[in-house]
Image 1 (spheres, protein in one colour):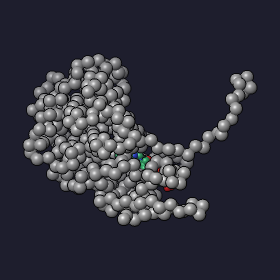
Image 2: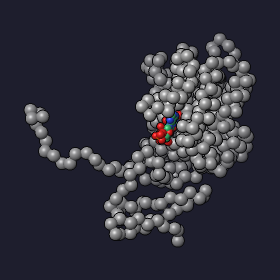
Image 3: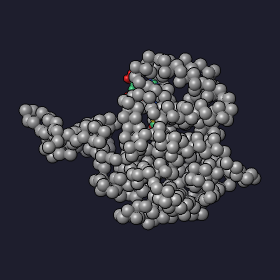
Length: 427
Ligand code: ACO
């Protein structure tokens, strides 16, 4: 018999089971709340609401812990590569050599995109935001792969999964190349997954491709660190869209749109834009610290604070080290990055930030690395999407395999009560 929690309302008592996760997280199971009490819960922003049971990612915001399928993010970032992590997230175990080779081969067999997709890409203005383009192209892929929608068997799911893992990097690279005015590139299947992405994105038409190991390693690590983060805004979007059985590509396209916002994945772009604005304004970081603390000023220090990490973001710790290495290795001297270091130091010592547990998050440092690697600012969130792809896929697959019901929250209606219609002439 599990523990129970009792709710008392107007002299009546209602019992609800308390369930415990493998990491001792407790939750009151309120599945029968409305049918037994007639009431619902109200929790804007879902700060206290568990939307599902999941075996993919564990995080403890208070202790600063992040694990994929039980493996610590620190160990994975150091010892695994992105494709292994993708396999781990999606299928639950680290792959054997044979499993990894098959996964890689199956993805490579799908790493081409129908030539007609180029026509859609051509329709976008060059200045279109890459996240909008990527979301649209991901959705458009359905038209070219209609069998990817109705996936009721694990085999059909697998096919859709390797298909999108193969094609998505091509779309990412094309989105960048279109923006930069470069001819589209199909990459090279003899390269590793991440190296091929770098090649597809940056190869100049008049130059042979030459591996930049600093770039490939830094990107591999960044993608691993972004690969999943349990039920965040975009992942919840993917699960909720997928819960209507809309199909993987549609769900991912919706997730990309959710990620775009500056309070979520868009923060890495917002960080650099903020740092550039501070530089243009004379580089006075103290002025911007004061703005961030002023309750009458909507300005927030981008890249600081996190909904669940009320301790240091463990990803930020790894990325900070990587950022220092990349900047050192590439010998980069950039005034914007000096401003970033200044802000970080001031915020970590300022009682406003310390008291509210506002630490630099993953986006603060990832923006800095992307900039050092020469990735255009508007592409930062696209890089995040590339990293998050396996996580979204894993969460979608788990949701479908568990046969979860369609997501449909309720509301407390606070609008007008029934009133008679007023004719136009009387309004
Ligand atoms: N700058 C200044 N003050 C801040 C900041 C910030 N970046 N973040 C939070 N605060 C303050 C709030 O004003 C609030 O102060 P109060 O208690 O005096 O009212 C307090 O800290 C708590 O903030 P909330 O908004 O309630 O925290 P919440 O958990 O809802 O928001 C969020 C988290 C959205 C990340 C927020 O910290 C923020 O806007 N940060 C900047 C954007 C950003 O970096 N987003 C990336 C998140 S990481 C990711 O998506 C991968």
